[in-house]
Figure (cartoon, rainbow, N blue to C red):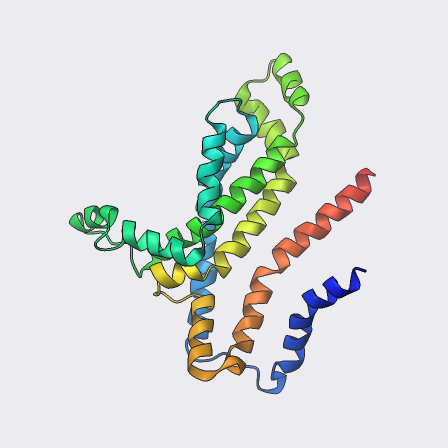
Length: 246
């Protein structure tokens, strides 16, 4: 009974393998620059996502505050908002004529069609996914273990660094992998808010519009090669760890 669903999922990738012109595999003009842009700025984005998201995830995992539901809603709203709509919202806020954008322009800064805007778009696209994944990992750490460490004299910061984060590290790593895939593959928000510099998804769309679907196969393979190994490796590592514990 599982065969139809598995076949449905695999058909596009098998088809891509046979349709790719391997004898004439090459990147189009500007594709290499798009790869550099996506890889370089996505690394910055993921680093900022970890710094911004980990405190929120930890607070959601450990708090008993009545504000927890409100914070969860605030995290879910960007995740559930369609990317195109999210891009329009960012332009309305951070664009040259937006409320924040006008203030930035007054001090000589802009957040539109430049590298900082690209990073910001990726953060909006990926941050909620990381927060939810990291929160789940942190929630899975037994509270009695943390309380036992505090009873033995460990300070809260020591418990966090030496106990909580190491025990939740695999789940947090999975959240980082998800954030990486979401950031580097983000199209809708980046397309509206930051058309330049062009990353891989936007360049694929341009190639598709200009030269047809056959012109994007090479860049599509690059995108898959860049995005898939990290989450697949983490998945296999988690499976091996589960078997070891069993």
